[in-house]
Length: 332
Ligand SMILES: Nc1nc2c(ncn2[C@@H]2O[C@H](COP(=O)(O)OP(=O)(O)OP(=O)(O)O)[C@@H](O)[C@H]2O)c(=O)[nH]1
Ligand SMILES: [Mg+2]
Image (cartoon, rainbow, N blue to C red; front, top):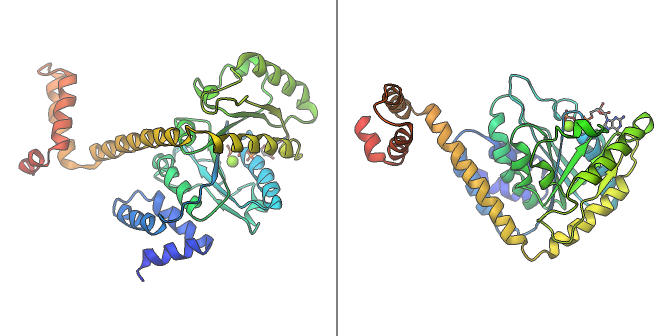
């Protein structure tokens, strides 16, 4: 038995360390690891289990990890198995606070029915959102009932993560009307549920204001699940308030999702988007790293600079060069 088929066997038997190793393979930026990952997927393809995949997004510090911890423990106690993945879009320069050393999910991580995967640190942060889809699939193959994907609401990560999930949940803090204007455009059209966290004690008044503002300003339905009305709930992850009720809403959504006849078409459309995004990334990487491409790019940009050729044509030249091994061979 080779190394990869042994890894697949361990994943099937519920070995968490093996799953962790497989996710590291999915996150690897080394192209040499892609065939290994493909081989692993082929060993796991007979598993048809589908998990309910929930993306949690929100500003840094809003309480995403605290919420997942409380919700996750509640779900484990109900008998579900839970996996948690983090997508950290922050650059290595600023460093990310997601999970990291302080996961805020200690209780959940220690639970026998849970798997908590901390966010990868160091380089290759840009690629992490891209690998999430494969990491989610690996958790599905490992048999988890519910997968939470935590992402900070910056950059494109929310959009990517929403494409790898069945339900998209936005966490807000009690902000008050004006600050709500700052929620990124497009996010409110994607959400399936909004939770106003930290709605306890002194924040109660602001939380109620936030709730009424949201109720009066957002479209209560979205196109994903036809009869769904987006719940807006005030909760407190810290004090475990609203956790049971929130799961009640999630379960209703889960049932609607499972009976949604367009589910497969929608899932395929999301996958198509993710593939195109990945193709874009692969090309961008090649343009940064391949010496022949860099040299040709330098020459073509000089031609644009002097007005010899239009930018539009320069792009076509580069694309032709990129897709023609013959042209590149003659340069090497
Ligand atoms: N008052 C109050 N504080 C909370 C609540 N939930 C979380 N917090 C606190 O908010 C801080 C951030 O919580 P996290 O759960 O780490 O937030 P996060 O959104 O995961 O943060 P990042 O991953 O860094 O973006 C911690 O100090 C928590 O204790 C809540 O319901 N009420
Ligand atoms: Mg967090």
